[in-house]
Image (cartoon, rainbow, N blue to C red; front, side):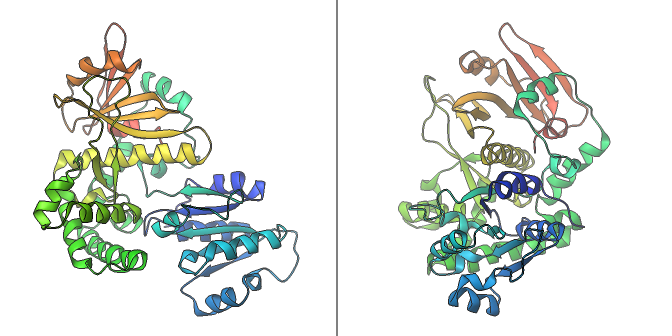
Amino acid sequence: MKYHRYLENDINTICFQADKMALVSGPRQCGKTTMAKLLLKERGRGEYYNWDEIKFRREWTKDPRLILPKHISNIKPIIVLDELHKAKLWKRSLKGLYDTQDNACDILVTGSARLNVYRKGSDSLMGRYYHFRLHPFSVAELLKENFSSAPDNLISSLLNHPKISEKIQDTLEALYQFGPFPEPLFAANAKTLHLWQRNRIEKVIREDLRDLSNLPELSQIEMLASLLPERASQPLSIKSLSEDLEVAYTTIKRWLNYLNELYYAFTIPPYSKSLVRALKKEKKIYLWDWSEIENKGARFENLIACHLLKYCDYLTDTGVGDFELRHLKNKENQEIDFLILRNKKIFLPIETKYSDEKPSDSWKKFMSHLASPLGVQLVMKPNVYKIYEYPNYKILVISAATFLQFLI
């Protein structure tokens, strides 16, 4: 079953209508190639090229213009270039192709984390493209056909006692159990999940990491990756990992950066602006595939982190604003799991509790300093909706499935 992805319309309207190239990066096996082929199929004219194809490599190396359509048509074709980042000097060649093809076709470039890495630094493509980050599936994407998630309507929608349905809860529980990636999620089978997890980790480290870094210590990095599920949703201690693996602190830090670039894990930095005794350096670590995490509470928090990051990345990539995800913790170990920032200002604080429907004590500590009229506490349990009113703010305790349907 092929789902239409949430970025398809934005790529057409934001990029192609403005005669820009679309660069789409994201985790391995999250659906980039499938989405590109669906866009190509809908357009009805164009070509798909993959760098692993010998014929395409030869044409591109000889002259990238050889891939351009030979015949003029009323329908503007799409040229899909998959894994192009593996080509030497790919940005320079792509720039030349874009500058000389006179808008004869729309260009969509897809790739894994390495595409994201090679976007950085001096960018010869500047002004010629928009970059989108494609995330795996989420509650809202699985439920919706018309993707829309205006942040200005989010709080009013939440306070308007939104619908709670069995379908929404079933969608959340499927994601919680099988993770967000298409193959294991739609198979909904434990054996498929375990085989897919093992294959993915091997490909990320043995193939993608080898291509990215030429590191000789791949088996040690596999050991590092095996330690991260039990540390997910917790403060990241590089010192502890260094001691466990008997590897230098700086080496662990470098390896973690590679795993971050390859979309295996990500970190959320702390928020400390104008808050006394807030921790300023302690990042929390999360996995892109939360199905690897055994602890129920940690898996639930990781699931929420991925949903919120997808929401922030989407709103940023589509020009709604500059959205970021942070966490808040003080020296007394009181914390708020997530803060969504909009243009550097707090938009919505969010706390996760797997089963506790009582408002967290942390709300009383922090809400008066956050200048936010609403705090949201998410629980896994269905059919939960309670509003607690305080002098200057409200706390909404709500089922996670009900909340997540309003994101993306």
